[in-house]
Image 1 (cartoon, helix red, strand yellow):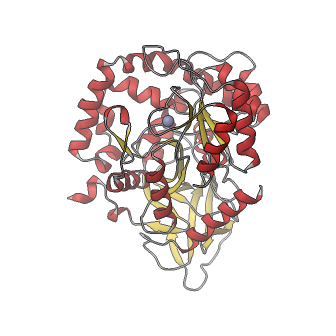
Image 2 (cartoon, rainbow, N blue to C red):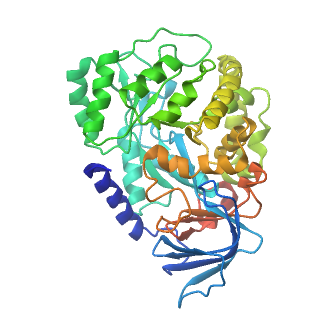
Image 3 (cartoon, rainbow, N blue to C red):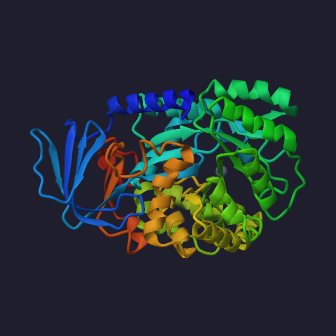
Length: 452
Ligand SMILES: [Zn+2]
């Protein structure tokens, strides 16, 4: 870890030590007793575990009889499951952009906060915003860090880095011509302390009508990645095909914002990704949800959705958004792409590559749908949990202090009533959510179920 990242990490730790908004207890010591622990590392579930949390840190994990220290809060875990809080490694927080094609920059923090509460309610304790109106998302990030809002931990890219007239160029992205121009623009972006910087290189673009978009030239791109690295900034990139993915990995990017999705990746690609240690955000649900909603919008009637979204919001998604995706041909195109996405994810997993659960969607409960798609791809439930916790931390580069229930790490955790390691759908049975060892009062969150 270089100096800049270390400072950022320390700053995060510091803020989270004091940020206590929304916490139910004032005690700094918590003992969760006799629970089945799924620690996020891929280890088999550990029955009858007791986990001691002191000042937000996991300080002891034992299966022996243990008594709570003086003044500790105690939670009985009989019949319940404890796992790390979920991490969505690819989302875009609503409230920063609107207008046709989401191109107008706005500062609708109320909308953003409501969505963040939906994520928390659904068990998500950290999100990585993979591209947004920079002023907006950095305000939300600093409000969260300072404890002014109750939210998952927010990590952010801010403004995307794109080629002039290239993919995602025109929704507040930073565009550039040549390396020298790019360096100046990157310096300006670094001033915001992005948790990762996200580039785009996609010639075709999304949707049924293929485009022929300009790319940042190979040499410029490689130099920009190196420049980001020299400045201690982690990088990720939107790619669509294997050629762009390979070039990005060769240039030294740390992560890919999607698996290859335009076609099946070649034999050997998954091994290459695994060898290079590049982390890939899964984003199967981008294709899965947009593809599915045209034919079946009933998933918006599932409990976590009815509990977090108002009737009006659900109708908007079930009808207005559904019709937009259907009439533009986007739904059909996404359905066509999904099988290759799932095959590519399975190959990556089998090769030992690091996949991080990411939805590329805007609604908290959708993380559970992403997890179900990963299971559908053939990834065992216990591994899906690792993808959705520890690997999310790896994607962002914060695994030193987040993502698993291990001694020394931050106590971001959820308690479930059913076992997600036997059926991933049980990840939906969220009972309690903790960030930094402090319980989030789910009855106080701005979600539909609390509005009655
Ligand atoms: Zn995205």
